[in-house]
Length: 431
Image (tube, rainbow, N blue to C red; front, side):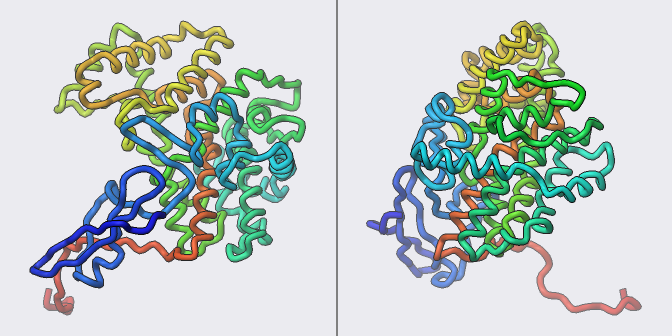
């Protein structure tokens, strides 16, 4: 963070204070209000924190106006095209692209920690057969602190490192086993001879009765989904992880808190909602009806997969996801899939219709990711667990950054209280 080179003056009830204006390496300047309450006795009011920088971070940067997403300074489209998920994990965790030796070491450490403690199998079997996979993932991740006691001391840098590798390595196994449990199939153990994405697909779709071959195009599409969802600045689940971590909770509990936050349909469940919307529309000829409903302020229907809380331009991740959708559906011979036709026609309208252009409702990453996951063979109940799998490295990187910040303190938002003022207790006989 650059030192304040200028100040903003705030005047209230005849008293003025100077607030430092801080500058980052890029992006909007921020007004430092840390001394606002001590000097003026007032708080700021910002529901949803839409105008509040909650932390200083060096990991991910979003320019919503330009439609730009950078991981440690690298554009997301370049990483999706030229890199792979474990290299991106290394980049997010350690701040720079690894050398070949560093990447080999990191990949080996992750690959050799993919197995779960055998007793965790019994934990899985404690869930109802019809439990949602996301509920299982949330529970198992939180329970990891009961199995891996040697990596819960957040004040020990080596234990933080071990916990980080363990979570990145084991979350694909947890998610795959949650899926297997939900469909009544036996758990498939991880394989060290497969890359990260291929290993996950193998654990999801292989069965003991016959060999399963992971198509490299499918694996590449899966890897891109992981890359595109790896981190996304201070979103709801990441902020949840940071807030939980600020209390010095163990890392597994913090990541479980992030999983729980991600489960919400307004966050990680958006791609499932988008696919369900495309299915509801059904055919291209019904699109005008739904477009009209979306424009009607009195109609509760809304188009999912369009627009974004941060992006006021085309979501840069959506461009990559569209390419993957074409490749996967082409490979599987379902280019003429009716859901895809509806999606492409909706995209065309969104880029040409004045209503969409004026409101900047461009297709976002959720628009195509659900189509890809369905084509690969995943039920909609697995969409959010896969999102959690991909985002785990981002949560860990953000958690580590917060823990290692010497100026860090426990999160404690304030409020604008509008309830009853002080009143005395009345005995029940007198009420």
